[in-house]
Structure formats: structure tokens, C-alpha cells
Image 1: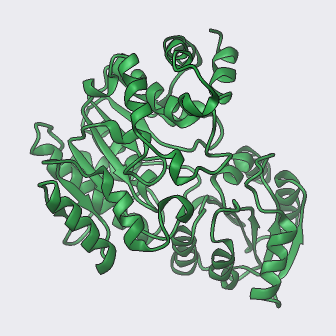
Image 2: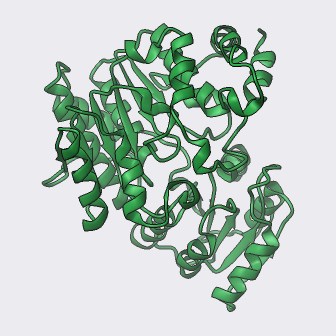
Length: 421
């Protein structure tokens, strides 16, 4: 396959990031059969498995940076991507190369086609992503892979692995159509990554979901460990919520050291200080303040609101470019963000049918906070340009609401900031 052929084949599969999955779509039998056809690459990897409503990507990035600082070759599997699909699978911070992707898809495609039948019976976009990541990490002979769950945990395609450590960062109300309507139900789905005898690191402190996680752990013969004590490191990511994520990474390091790794406190310090995770309350410029973020659910909107209040006091005009997926609790997100901004620039990202029309967002804002100013734009670039032109010294402009929006505007925002400076 050429690279273009490989991408066309990959994106020709069912993609639940575009069309929301139903609970019936989430299963592991097909993924296990798929990987058997590829020689079970996941069984040849040492890895850490991470789930959570919020913070799993940041925690994965921190842990990866620490392990790299300790001298290990590290695979990192995350989703979705910001700009290029190759970002989903990285080795030592370098995304899979186009030639590598095409060569591996040559191995994958015949196995996918062998499933036969209709599109519902063949591996999905994310299942192919997962297999591609496992194969890439084996081929590149990583010392350890850090694998982030795509959705939930119990029936996520990554949950075929046998990790050294499992991490559950947080539990909150998100993907409720697939995972359940209460934090207890969602916690049960997240806790599905817990394996017999595998230690679990958890950042879930709320009593109800915490009890669910501890019950599942006890039933499979392991214990939940929670970080405790002061945090004495300098962190390269902004926000107090990132300190909680960093504590999970540090606790995981302790457990990995018990399993034969050698990760010094100095390596932990270097990794946490140097870690980069784009578009997670990323301060792209400071005069005016320009923030790129991808808060896409209520817990992450809360983290953004808290960080803006605690760490980024701005006395000037505060504007936000906002687009969001229809399966999110966007009225609650807007209610959370309304006090933080003077003006909303509502838009949509790409051609994804899941995106809420900007006019609908405006209607919701008028009900929640009728005193707020807003504008609607048919596409993300025009919304960003309008917001940027209206931003002056001492002001703040933030892009948030979706990974898809942050990815689409990622380069345009940086280009404007470079031109301004």
C-alpha cells in the first residue's frame, strides 16, 4: 500500500468518533480475533493502561516524559489526534512515519478483509488504530508502552492487554449513552480495565465511584493505591488538576520500580518539568493571552474555569471560540464557562455531523446567561479570525469545547501569534 491507500483503507472503516457508538457496538471478541490474526502483538509488550473521564491523556504524557528521562524507549498511544492521525502512536515523542504506517497497514488489511460480511462485522477505525499501535511498538522494540483507553474501559478495544499497572484518573458524567447515567455506572465501566493481580492507581476520591472501583479491584484480587503526600516537583503543564494527574504518574513510577524498572527522582523531576501536551490549557501567548484548549466535557470545563480563575487573572476583555459535540452536556459546560468570558464566538468544526450548530449554542447561552454577548460563524477559521482581530493588549481569547476544534485551529492560532510577535 501507498500511504494514501493506507489512510483511505483506515478511514473507510466505521468510525465511532464521527458516528456515536451504542452500547451494543462495544465488545472485545472481534478485537481478540483481529489481534490473533496479527500474531497477538499486545502480548509482546510491557505496558501501562490508563482510563478516566478527564486527565488520562495528560497523565499518559507525563508518565511517558518521565520514562524517557530515565532512558527508556517509550511508546505512547492516545486518541483522538489533534492535527495528524499519526500522532495517535508515538515512540519517544515521534509520531509513526508515513512509510511505517503504510507498511503496517499492509499487514493489517488482509486480516480485516478476512472477517468478511458487512461493515458491522469488521474491525472499526479505533480497533485498527489499536492494532496499528501495538504492531508499531513491537516493531520499534519499545521498553514500555503507555496505552490510553478510547472510550470507557471495560469494552474498549485496548482492554485486551495485560498491563504492569492500571490507572484510573477520574470518573465523571461523560459518554453517558454508552457508559451509563450515574457516576457509579461509569465507574464500573472504567474499572473494567482492572486485572487480577495488577496494581491499580486511582485518582477517584468521590465516595460513590471510589467504592465501585475498590469493589471491582477486590473481586479480581488486587488493591487500589491512591497518591498521598505533598507534590514537590515543577510541572510543565498548567492547572492544579494537572498536579493531581502528576501525582498519579509519580505513584505509577513507584510501582514500576518494584517491577524491575529504574526511575530515579531526578528523572521524575526532569520529565515532569519538560512534559508537553498541546492544547490542554496551553498558553500560546501572554499579551494578549491566547489559550488553546480541548475541554470537551463538564469535568474538563470545570478544570478550565478553575485554571482561568486561579492562574490566569486577566483584567481585559475575555472571549472564547467554542464548538462542541452533540453527545456532550453542552448546556452545563456553557453554564460553567459563562462567568469566565465576556463574549462567545460560536462555530462548528470540520464537517463532522456530531457538531452542535452554532445557532443552537447561541440559543442555549441566551437562556443561561442572557447578558452575555455572542456571535455565530459557519466555520472555525472565520470564528477565530473575528475573535483574534477583536483581541487587544491585556485581553484574553480562548479556543475550547472539542479536540476537533483545537486540532482544526491549532496551526492558525500559532500563525497569528507568530505574526503578532
